[in-house]
Length: 160
Image (cartoon, rainbow, N blue to C red):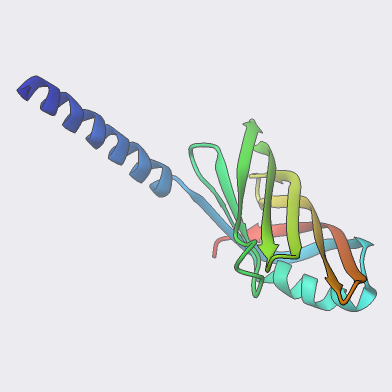
């Protein structure tokens, strides 16, 4: 029994060590400058708010291959969005997605994918696709609404 407890304690300490190593080896970045921005789909009046969110965004790349994207002033039911990344040299590809139910009749989702080059200066290129929809039947009348937006941008990253 003592050997089993000792083995369990060893495993638990290794897991705790690995988790702290992943957190301590995290690479945190903020947007330094938006170099390029393109709205692919959506209403033109949404662009200033999207650019403000990108300008205030924080990206975290963890040592275990996971990543987090947290744009400024965004919905807390979708963001931060968590995903994975894979690297070849200093260049990495990433992808993340999230979805959320809105009441009993709607949903929202976000998908991001792109590349990051950890050279000097670090540079990130990303496409973000957002969608939202809802539907209802009131007194026999069907109602529905859907919105989608997508953006492609390139930013220079800095330390937060």
